[in-house]
Length: 448
Image (cartoon, rainbow, N blue to C red; front, side, top):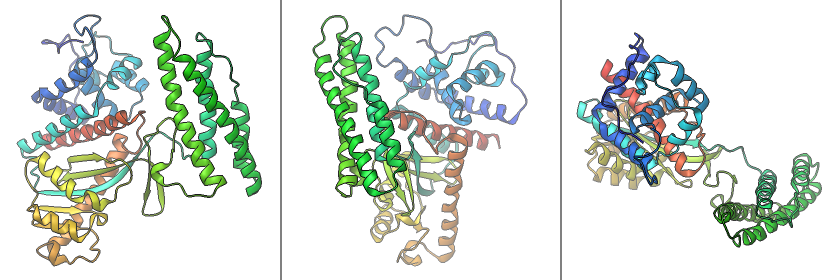
């Protein structure tokens, strides 16, 4: 870890291209707000015993810039490593000299995965406040809507979850065999795969249930092997004890999930009981994933996002919700959050119809909002929401603009699906996309 260089090594001159000009303006924004890079530096230093020793690493400023490049372009780590090495403009933006060696894929992944959502939340708020200081965003008008960012999971079925459980438990139990000497177990992966396929190809209910019963049987056997392996690994002594305990923790966590899948499969398939969405396991690898049903039609597996945006097109707030809360529950909290971030209560607010309720209208007005329009009236009178029908129509049209902003985030900044694993990384990925979009939007405002 090192501090930012006072003087850069030799760099190539910039090029005359609109995107290069945008990156130059973003670079200027970052330079004028050094606390953003300091936040990233704190994340990079977290957990290091001797940060001043060892090889020179990436600076916080460089990692923040690399994150923006990755999210702007939707690069994989391999693509990101190539473009940083190949592109004069990206090297210049990320503060690599003409003769500096650029980081490899593994180094990029290691550094970006150290970023914490809490730090990116603060960077996002600082960026919004900087836009307010420049007069780009006033905070007088706000529009709010909800969307879903999916996790990196396939649409789940009980049979596929059981097969995944048997397969991964067998892999971990294989690691417990050498050098830890745990041998009394059998690999039922092939049998589980055949039964999983039989469930999908079953011609009738009886054949399907028979295949499920056998699949459940081998899943219970595998979970039992894992529980005994955990007890064995916790008794390992000597220099291998640390590795044994780490493997025991992995097995213990996965075994708990497998037992939960076994329980929900028995209830749903064999007993015919409905399982509430909040109790369902939809992925063994991304257990934080929520089931989101929109408009009683489409089902998504990920997390619900509540977004607020101002007239400038900047995303002023992003809330990642757990579970599937009703929009009506978040209307007033989102308005309060916007006021805290921007530093003032909006004069006008336009929200999607799902947020509409008499209580939300009353509480929103109590905050000091003059005109509070919901895109669907849902029994509310226009005269209660806004000063006139003309104002209501203007705010309804204004709210529609956030649909385009959400599409922009999903299409250009990867917000449609998170490709990072784990809940903390999910939040980091989402906030990285929002920060990248805001940085580009602010740069375009300043260039114009």
